[in-house]
Image 1 (cartoon, rainbow, N blue to C red):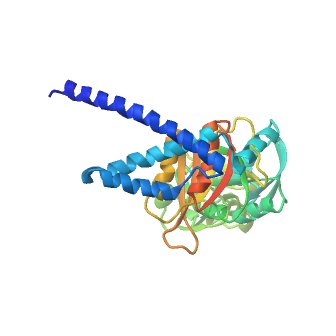
Image 2 (image 1 turned 90 degrees about the vertical axis):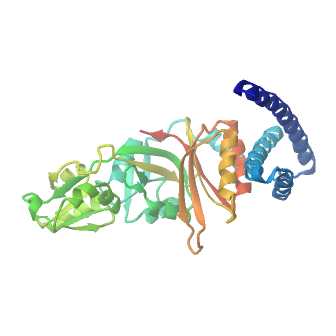
Image 3 (image 1 turned 45 degrees about the horizontal axis):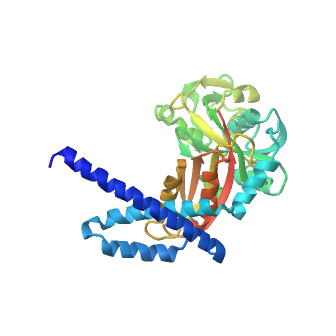
Length: 380
């Protein structure tokens, strides 16, 4: 047989498969109606495990891994089709729909906002980009910003979560696990670092450089070219600049924004010392209450999965089955547990999409713990 004959055989088999697939999905819809009448959940993990075992027994040994992957995806599609057939929202989807309906149509221009650091920090500049007139309260740590939101001291908080050069701010992701909040907007902002020192200081005089560890990582190439210089992490780039200014010393410097030069009366020994000119940091704006503003096309969730083989694959297959694109997946170890992780997801789909609402309605049933962090748009 030549390739044309073989492809003709494939076409004939595919016709049978598509007819059987449509027939199977029609039965799935009937099962959904039965579950509605009996008050049963869409997900039946015991039945799925039994079914996979039966299929493995019916499949030639060399094809069992492939059949398991195939039917795992079919189960995901069937569950989504049943959910769509039932058309019933979960408590979470109802909460999201209420937030879409009741959130003001315009993002606020003025608000009390919590930021980590001091005046001149990148968080402040991110806040100025998000709000026209923000009353900023500065806090010493990221955790204090989360607590300020929880306690109602500030309406919003602005926190960095990742950088295009240095990667994720791991301490922030760890704090997300222990605080209640909602993401209402995000911002991607270009970051430039300068080496700032007291006027009259020369580059060869500098023996110590202070900055936040993220800024240090973002300027690693420049720092590696210096000799006899000690690099010391501190809480914030602006705090480093302020400390250098208040010290009056001419043997120390700070990696900070150029705006800090005028804020604290410093001089720039060298501009733009970051590793790349395309150096961006992503900030999130958080609130205590769920707010979903018009145009929200990004959603964030946080979850933990059963510590069993295939649990992450099954979750990812669910995203694939409904056509939702994941643009970030971050994992962080769970405190006090060995080799178990919290997973953070960002995915791109408008909050108005029925696919997204079905997915969010189903995800909690696949997870040990699940937190919906919000749907929002990103400012660039």
